[in-house]
Length: 108
Length: 113
Image 1 (cartoon, chains in turn purple, blue):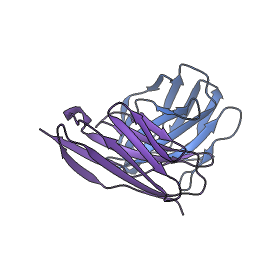
Image 2 (cartoon, one colour; image 1 turned 90 degrees about the horizontal axis):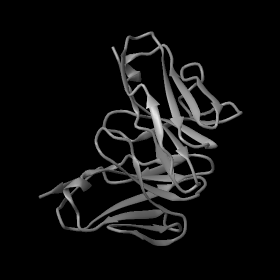
Image 3 (cartoon, chains in turn red, purple; image 1 turned 180 degrees about the horizontal axis):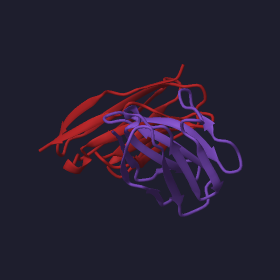
């Protein structure tokens, strides 16, 4: 079967670092994606990994280990505006499969 | 990147009626996707719509209930037919532009009474 797991909720403090993990089991793999979704809005693209290793984009980094079926999104210097849901998605052979999302609350 | 618009942005409909949602992209794209997102949940793929071919539906979704049109490379419609309260959800279209990124429309918030 196909399965993507993420923690349901996380809480962190403004200025801190948070790591959101994602494990997956899918048939076919053409990349792992992270999206941010604020309440009431559409998801927006954050990062993409197709090869093992770390991709850095400003305050956001994403890591992938294909052999372990594992990825994480790292958010540094957290800001209040980072409070949102973070969706992990795997691109299979012809479609994207989304995880259930992690709701991140950033506290002052 | 791609700019995607959806119409309507929201609607309240009576059970038994149908609603057609439009998705317009500012550039030509091959692959378009239709998703449903129920409150507090993640995205569920309804179907993949490629221009010039029949839409491919995911398990649990059928063409009679969710007919899709894809007349050209910039436009698609999704119809939610014979609606029931269980169809109340946000419906999102998305496109794959480069193979690396997927862009989403703003969504259509549907409430069925």
